[in-house]
Length: 102
View 1: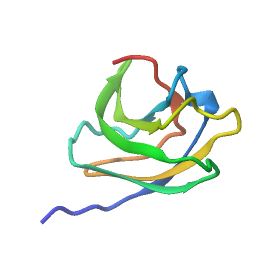
View 2 (view 1 turned 180 degrees about the vertical axis):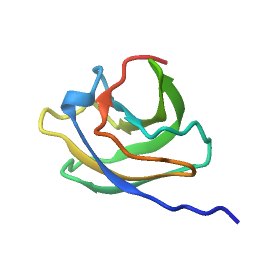
View 3 (view 1 turned 135 degrees about the vertical axis):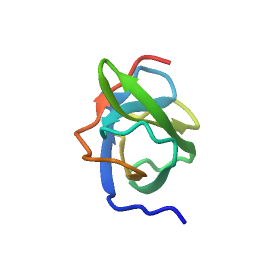
View 4 (view 1 turned 90 degrees about the horizontal axis):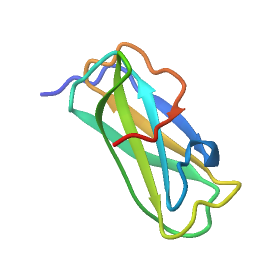
């Protein structure tokens, strides 16, 4: 049985978008564990969101989670999305930063 001990709600906006139909943000957690759950919590976008997915990443020297939200079309200028994020072994959840890498 997996023990999830901490969780957070990550607030994502157009600021986190590298352009096109995605919002991508890195959340430093201090863990590289691949057991991660990301669940869409709330959004002000009226059109459909195609999917939400995540994976462990190292950004600089920081371990954490890359969260990606893909929209049906261009990310609206006023887009706001909140995602519940849980990672096994997470020590903390820092504010999300825009992620332009792979």
